[in-house]
Amino acid sequence: MRPELEETLSQLHLQLESIDDLDEAEVERLRAAAHEIQSTLDRSDISSASLAERLQEATSKFSQSHPVLTNTVGRIADLLSQMGI
Image (cartoon, rainbow, N blue to C red; front, side):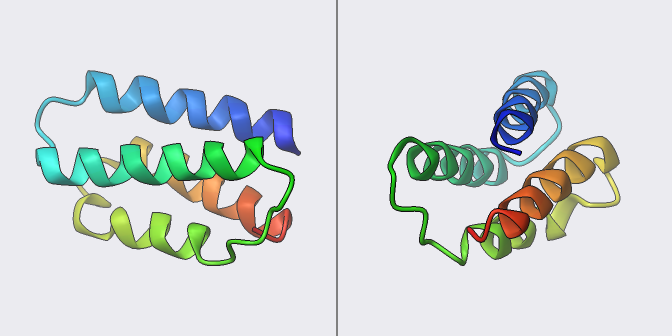
């Protein structure tokens, strides 16, 4: 599950680099959430249960205008939930 999560995080980073019509604050919020997820994975204590929720909340403003990005974030949130993060 972790390799799939890491691959999906990589996809998120690529998508964020290619989107130019998304509010910069939203992009930064997603980048920060992705960084926090990666930092949590890099540590042995996987205990931050709100990461998935915060990530999903960050996509609420652009879910209709950027469905691919929203789908990627949803996959990450699902994987985090399955891992108990």
